[in-house]
Image (cartoon, rainbow, N blue to C red; front, top):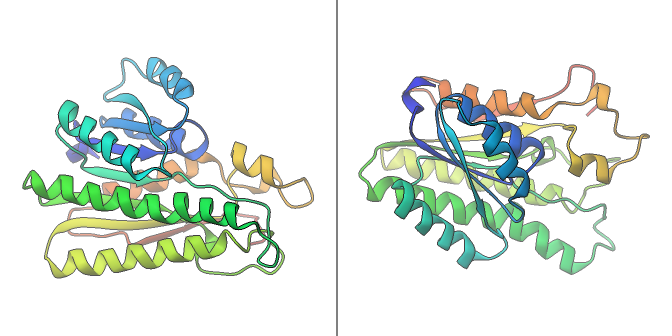
Length: 247
């Protein structure tokens, strides 16, 4: 991680759960981390707690369903920090709904956050890298095991297509960056159930068991693993399961 010391990382959904763990890990590894979320109170507390670490955490408020707010955030980062070198698209939403009856308003929110925000943040990150004539950078997209499998008994059949779309977008982006012979890398990280406030709010004890679930720090470790690979190595996909999970 030494080569990323002092570089700027943007972590979406950084106010809690996996995003907070990822932001903390990158700060401790010396990066300047912009954490974005709709609510910044938790990030402000985390930023205070991280004072004295190698890097620092800068909270920014942003509603990822609004493209103009994402663009405004990138402009602020450009003015204050120069630009974004690494983005971790962690923010995501899920709803307990099925394909037959899922409300269209909820479905739109799923795609706005899980797909369109990822596309916008990724494109603006690449633009930021290239306009500064940097030849390296990293796009890391947090997906799910649902991105490769439609689970029969998991109640997230409207969520699953968004993660499959995210995976396809990331692979298409990788091909385009490779064709341009850049050293900007792309990684998809696909965890199974992670013990986060989102998951605890969605599933009851009949399906979710903390003892058989991943922890946010496990996902953060996967992010630093991908970033730490030699510049000539692209860790394209990491799939994470707790050792005794059943997915």
